[in-house]
Image (cartoon, rainbow, N blue to C red):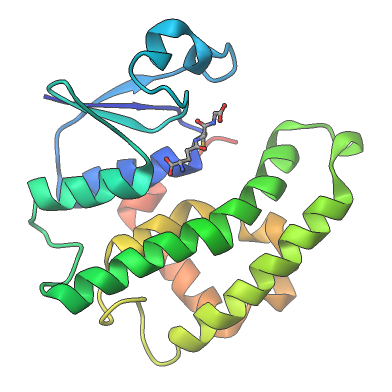
Length: 204
Ligand SMILES: N[C@@H](CCC(=O)N[C@@H](CS)C(=O)NCC(=O)O)C(=O)O
């Protein structure tokens, strides 16, 4: 039996919840209460020594890091395929997963966490401005890659798109809306309108 340890507000866990829905994989959801620091308790650290969500438990096989979990689910549940067949398609998906983490998620955290959970007076404004500029640079690159296509890899919906969805949700608080390039805006709107996205929209 699959068990996903997650939290409804977690961007990284949302990637997995979307993939589970897209692949129609039954999975028990265990909420780890981040607010009460359940993720730092010895019982949870014994499962994931990094004390983060998501964490997948497949009959005792424990896996953390959302990108690794996405690829594991793909291998274990290949239909419907969310990675194109062949070395090139898989490598491109892997490249985008890593770039999403390095160029988007790393900076998004600097903005999303304070803006969602901290009073405005405590927002680290210089760090937020830097992160926002870095995200804008990345969006410009994505925009060129999305010219004339609907998805990042081989013009079909893949794990690469899923990895971005939780962060695209917060684009309006990360960059000036008017500065979102047209192809990214089109891609983002379509991804956020998918039933799997709508079913997993965080309450906050
Ligand atoms: N690189 C990790 C990041 C996971 C992560 O940072 N999760 C956040 C929630 S979105 C978390 O557990 N934060 C708690 C903490 O770091 O104390 C992944 O891709 O799974």
